[in-house]
Length: 449
Image (cartoon, rainbow, N blue to C red; front, side, top):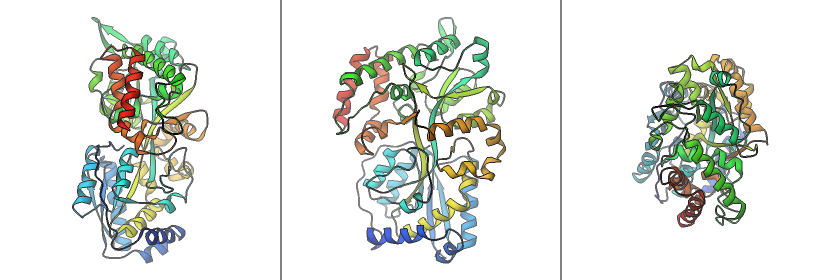
């Protein structure tokens, strides 16, 4: 997943005299052609592409290097990969644009970051490549009538729970948030007045992990930030009631959480569950990989479920990852590479993070090489459960930065300003009433947008 670093860079980036119409016409020609031998003919030998990769695990870097070496051996196009921690991606992209040496291709995540790239003139559409495939729900979103990234995974926020502890306590998978709260209370271990083992961990720090992971129950309850005309309605009518109920619920959940929650972020969400310090945690498929690596005994004892609302509605927060093509003198060559990569090395790339790279492209689920991976086979039930979430209509999939009637920077600005995480802090750290928190948050949203 890519963590967005706020920025407000606005600049125009040239495309070596190529108009947008000519560029799209050329890209369409690329997308309409075969993805095998003809691409070899069109590849321009001697070209060097710059690739900014923020998937920095050893396996992912190795998979990308193999693909780039293969492409160079076939086409004569060299690809220099710059792997950067996810927290520095935005800064590196914008610095490269400002220096007149933009990246030709990059991995990207949150919509907030991608819209910044679009508004800065830093990337070009990849619509024709995206339209070749069928995608899961909300994966291949459009902005200004174009697709600006080529997805490779979802980061669905599911609730992880300990099957063994559920069995010991006679607990059932929760259908409502009251059920969930009772389960968390039943599994909380208190020693000397302090929580030793948390019933759950749902973050509240002012960062993207909270924006991403902490509002599934609010979405399940149906609280909305905006109406169809972008009016802020979070504090209006039934929305205010729903948001207030959610905060009351979160306040009770917080009492079951381990200490130090104001500093808990991505790594701690995984480690607290993997080390047995929390009976539930919210996270994407990467938590399964963490269990296999750090505590394989628990890798046979977990289960997942969506976030429930008060009366049984279900929802998931989400983000995604994908590839963007930079607006550079070599954008056409970068699109050719991405087109080839999508056919020749896409599965290898997904398997480099076998559960975290939960496929957004639906044909992958029928790919025999992908299906035969030993860890995919071992955790097949989990993968198919997550697949059911992106195919059915009974589970809401929502996010702070996709709130509102369309993809827009207004919702992204709410995400970037950490408005919603700070609402949670006001509730449980500031001891404010839920109603006051909702009213203050709505006013903050109005000021941000």
